Length: 129
Image 1 (tube, one colour):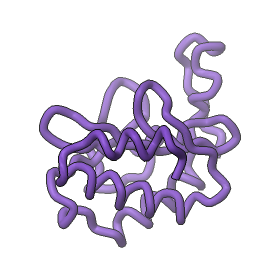
Image 2 (cartoon, rainbow, N blue to C red; image 1 turned 90 degrees about the horizontal axis):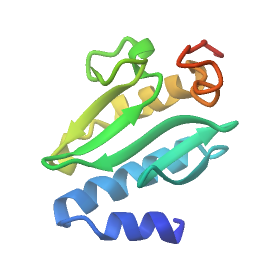
Image 3 (cartoon, rainbow, N blue to C red; image 1 turned 30 degrees about the vertical axis):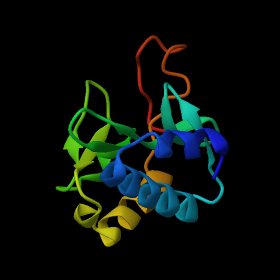
């Protein structure tokens, strides 16, 4: 684990640290080819420079965010924002269903909207996979 991400996870309370460490381990194991780093103050994984998945500490939970998640058509993910993102929120590590998480991670590789060029396209999202 990169030091910056380790520091991020270590800064959480005990429950949120457990959630963050499990999410990190599962995402990293599944998206081996992805680059990961702290981006906008939280851990994010990228494929070819395009943000795919990340997690962040919210006031009352840890949010798992898939940038193209609305296109996954998964009932366990909720719409987030005005683009194509979807999220799941956790307050306890036991709430994470690993089968769901792995299925979502597989979809994150195969269903992608081009967030990398969203500014250049003035807010227009184009599906790239």
